[in-house]
Image (cartoon, rainbow, N blue to C red; front, side, top):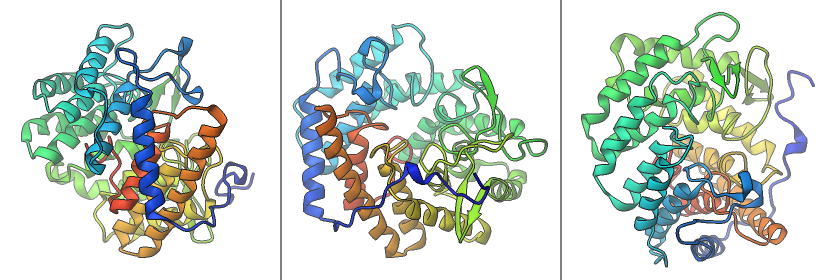
Length: 395
């Protein structure tokens, strides 16, 4: 495959020719809330979808594709749409946290473990006692050698960033400082994978570029807490971000994608987890006015649009909804309505993909990041013209 090939054409499909219909979109969101709320089993949660099957078909607990994320998303959507839910998720999220903490292989991960589950509990219930547990778990994860968002401190610090942004509480500043120091000291600036971090992940060492496991996700504690970043690091941060984008860009015809990993260069996915959409979403808080970065993000959005929806499905992590959020982000950043119109097309396409999934599998997929609820969150975001992603940008 030539280095100038931006992505694998077989992973994408043409976007629908159907027009955006706000009434259809609202109906889809309402139907998704109702169906997933109705399939909840007290003290068990939701039966795992075949696309999310765990060992012995046991439910997951975490935010990424587990019970906590589903409860959080349902509650968030119910508040957004004025829907009344039939289950007591305040009680159930408390049970979810207690069960997870009492189990085996407990980890302080944001997407998989205690930090995300406990933040979901706080978002649903407002119980302030949860905040102390969140802070303690974030601190316990400092120095995690994965150095990426799913398992490491760049992920667990997202909870502190969200709480700081919501409340303005400076209690999280020391934790954020500590993660900034950790990441700055381990940020590779030369050698075989410059401007990346090394991930000790799943039994191997890698250097990832994107949002889920790589450098783009690791930038959040810098970009969303610039006001407490050391003065002598701010100029260097701008140079490193631009250099990272340039070093790992795949450029063709005024479109940019990014390699998934370096040393050796590999992976051309166009998804949130790896590729241009995740780069755009992760750098959405990068201050405007840097022509180098602005150009990269714009061309990344062009790549996301030209690639088209993902054949594998409609989800946030590696599907059409996640890519659509990147287009909605670009609408906010540029003020150009073309990106909102393109996000609407992706939302229309994702709705149709969910319908096909349900026909194929016979049941809704309940998870936040890999299921129908993530799509409902995206469709609702398009309706409200709000590009924030639940669990990343908003609570």
